[in-house]
Image 1 (cartoon, helix red, strand yellow):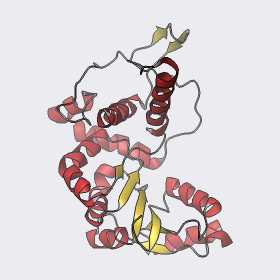
Image 2 (image 1 turned 90 degrees about the horizontal axis):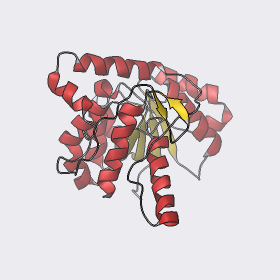
Image 3 (image 1 turned 180 degrees about the vertical axis):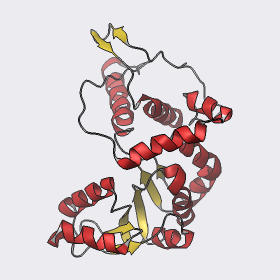
Image 4 (image 1 turned 60 degrees about the vertical axis):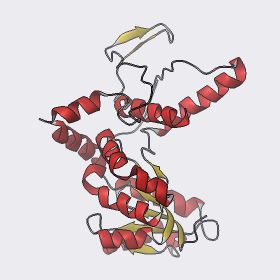
Length: 258
């Protein structure tokens, strides 16, 4: 365990998702169980959030840092063992923070669903992260925790029960509740803007294995995402909006574990 002032910092605490994360942490984890801080660009909004959370949040420290100010990001990352970032689109606001966490050896996780940004960060910083010991975990939201951990659990059960892993895994979402936040919508719009007119990026976004090492043994092709009758489930199925990122995250996890 890193000997830092905080075990965890939530950066983007005043965002839609950041507020949810902070409310949960304030309710479920108090000192000495967890030493953590709330961080954002605006001190006034942080104070408003702290007041809204009530008495339970009174001992929680506040940190002011800006996604575009490398010095404040480095100072923040050096104070904590791990950091959660809810500040997106990450392709616009995530580069300097990730670099700061890697430089300080701070573990990092986020909610990105932007494969082009993840790929760019892997190419730029994977070796440095391995050298500093910083663990970088992207896509820790609805994309792609259910898919990634769901496949892991399924394969563990398959091995225990049948003595072998599944060669192919299907995921069907039967029901879901909720909507997209402003940050999620902005991330999608920005991704399409980046890809417009960039044929290389367009090809990358079509590649299921874009997040895997080049020498990984590629076996799957892009599945037809049209509406179809799935005989395995005895039901009609259509394309899932999260499939584009979930598939790539699961394949990367599999490649790392292979």
